[in-house]
Amino acid sequence: VEWGGRVVAVITDTEHEPDKLDQAVLGLIEDADLVIYDCTYTEEEMERRRGYGHSTWQQGVKLCEAAGARGLALFHHDPTRTDEELDEIEKLAKEGFAGAFAARDGQTLTFPVSLHKKR
Image 1 (spheres, rainbow, N blue to C red):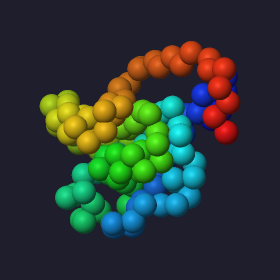
Image 2 (image 1 turned 180 degrees about the horizontal axis):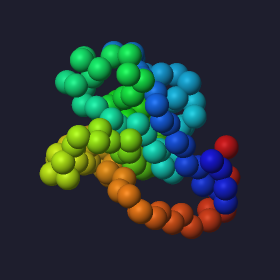
Image 3 (image 1 turned 45 degrees about the vertical axis):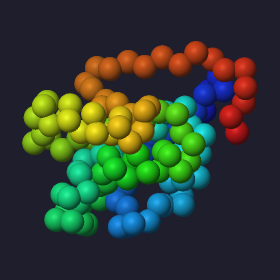
Image 4 (image 1 turned 90 degrees about the vertical axis):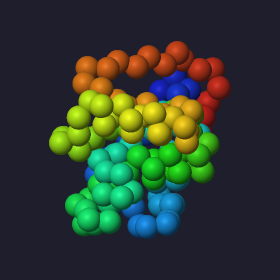
């Protein structure tokens, strides 16, 4: 979504190949102000969940770093996770990418209009 000189990319229900960055996703999220990324699993869980059509917070971090994105909203959480587990994932993601945070139900984000066109 592009508006007011801002870019927000929503990447959901995507499954990445091990040790590869999806070039199509990189193109969509390049220089985005915010990437809302499918973070259902961890890399450890992904080994058992291949074929489910979801991704990991670790892959979201790698993609955002490579694409020069400024923010990463971890969403599409595994519904069996506790709040404590999500807090830990958020902490780990922030260690790898300062702009990462766990999206929460009802959360609202505001982006001021930018006079600089992104694309």
